[in-house]
Amino acid sequence: MTESPAQAFASNLLAAFSGAGIDQIFLAPGARSQALAIAAGQLADADRVDLYVRLDERSLAFSAIGSALASGKPALVITTSGTAVANLHPAVLEAHHSGVPMILLTADRPHELREVGANQTTKQVGIFDDAVRVVFDVEAPSAEDNKVEDIPTLVSTAIRASLGLGGTRPGPVQLNLAFREPLSGTFPNAAELEVTVPTGEETERELEFAILDGSVATVVIAGANAGDGAVELAEAYGLPIFAEPSSGARFGDNAILSYPKLLVEQPELAARIGRVIVFGKPTLSRPVVRLFFAEQIEVVVVRSRAMGLFDVSRRASMFVDDVTFDVDVDGEWLEAWRVADQKIQLSTPVSEKLGRREIVEQVWAATEATDNLFLGASRMIREAEVWAQAGNLNIYSNRGLAGIDGSVATATGIALATRAQTRALIGDLTLLHDAGSLTIDAQDGPLDLQLVVVNDHGGSIFENLEPAKQLSPKSFDRLFRTPQNVNLATLAVTYGWLHIPVHTEVELELALRTKGRVLIEVKLA
Image 1 (tube, rainbow, N blue to C red):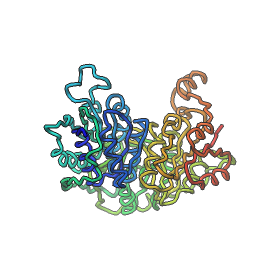
Image 2 (cartoon, helix red, strand yellow; image 1 turned 45 degrees about the horizontal axis):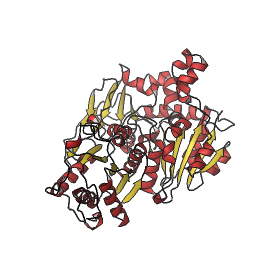
Image 3 (spheres, helix red, strand yellow; image 1 turned 90 degrees about the vertical axis):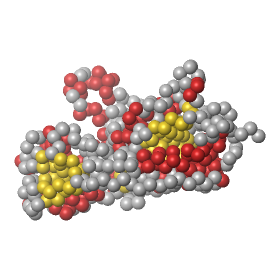
């Protein structure tokens, strides 16, 4: 039997990750990464890890994002060399900007085959620039030096960097692994190895607090990944809170649900705002963003470990970890927002036919506290900002860069990690952009995953942009709206999904009760 230094290294490396608690592996097939694939398979066969195989590396990486969003732990992503690595880039950027842990194991040619025209070889070190927290270019193991002794420190450093335990933000880490032939073997068996990985304590930093003047009319703005700290502050001091659907803070008695409309339709009330306290990354509402640029409004930013710095107007007076107030806040301020919110909720008529508001309300009503709900970066998340009711639900969305890339894959990763009922509320273009992620791997096992696709035959989100008024309808449709007439029923069946067409609220309510992999198509005129 020919011994493969590549296999010895790969088996010990994956055994070390498994021993350190990293148990989600996402693999795309390839030649240069074959030793890693074999080791991953050995661990999966021994039930030490969950292994998911995907054909498309972009889909692969976004599934890993979904897994990490739901579990809080980094998943391993294994690819071969060349364009396979480049296909990870959209997900790496999203993970970087939204603070999602991820560890990339990118196989590569040895150093002597780089920059000499070798097949499937490009510059993989630095390909992600500063979007990775750290990159390790690991030299190819050899019979003389199999590099196994370096693995415990390498794995420990990668995990800590990905989780942000060194005082930085969580995010992606790249281990670029060079391998020489023979590229694989069946020995050693990764499942039979026990590799001890040193642990370290999280780096503590001194927290900064602010004492604010309670007489200034203040609102809390909770953007993506704000968390329940925004709710705790608002309820502790009687402040209204404007919480986006993916904030994790759209619940409680202080949530003002109609804030996008109130900021426009109640200018007298909006004009009284003297301070905003920002949690997370708010990106959905133009009226909210305009508050950050208003010279009469003080902007206080509570640091977000996941989303990083937020100061789009460059006007933040301070960046802190927590705030308190020197005097009691006037209770009339919160009550004024509550009354205005209730009036606008009651005065807005409900459509007699199934529209976007009714879709949002139905999806929210059907989602239990133990379910997952993923919101695509399309028009429907903006509709949810206006119509979603308050509730402490498990809501996810890729708001780091707010792209539609990998939405189906991300929702799938969430479902895989939790094995709970998972819904994705997306548009038709969002679905088509990631149609390849509909591919079902039987080894994934049964999933309760619903794709609620609002099909308005193109990008209706662009109708609110300036070109909609400046261009002819024909030019606008071609350049922005990009109408489509794909038969989603055929698409769903081709990939093995159940397709349910929906035209009424009753039909949608029944469809949302369906188990398994379901594509619910809501057609809008």
